[in-house]
Image (tube, rainbow, N blue to C red; front, side, top):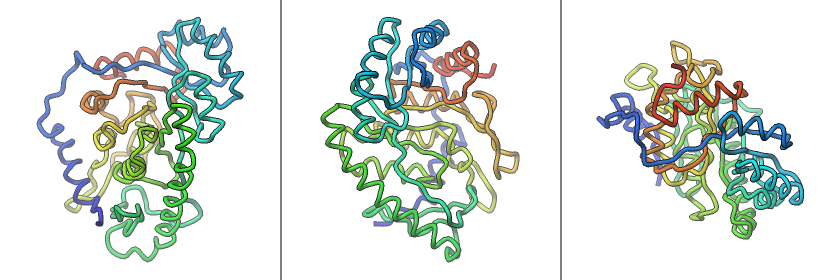
Length: 315
């Protein structure tokens, strides 16, 4: 069966554009509980104390030997912090480090495409085969120019499936989720593709790590003869639903013509954080908001608190 993401994306995106399908926005109280975290390499007592004093509850760490991870877990625990995830942990060593940290997931980048002509972000008009995950179209009209991209993406999808399959037994053993993240590598640029990859394993140990800012540059698509924001972050969140394991927080500002943009501080970009918070609520997401911006801790903590409360973070 072929998946027509053009029509499907239009319907979902249109609902978002007209107010989330008539769902009223609300600023809490929410049933879901969100916690704040930052990424740290140096897990010294001084560094962890700064994080704790700024009002954070958790840390995302990196792969280290299990003995070192166990010591970091003990130190963080004494300060009332939890190491909840491991960056780039999509390997047996990363999964074992996560287990020693007491983390419940690792971030894994499943694949990428480079060295070939790629459509502009706003040109994507994707269809794919739901049996194989293979792209059958990436733009409207003639796809000859992008045939090498389609071939490379299909190889990357096959490779991702095989590599993840090999990791699942270790994930089962360690009780650590392999969370697949969307990154700027021309792979899985639509939420239906990433959902297909994660859901296809039918395993509780394979889910999605959604980076809110990463794919805003792909949010625009041609509809009714003009560019419209069809795939904002909330559409990705609703597409993943219960597959959502973790969330990275950053922002991106699209240009006025929706062609390109630039990184922005959380709350200063295109993201509608009130809508995102409600989408997380609707997905039943109880978990971590982990910053990936490097904003000064006090201001970052304040902005994340406002997101959690269903308020505009930049106000």
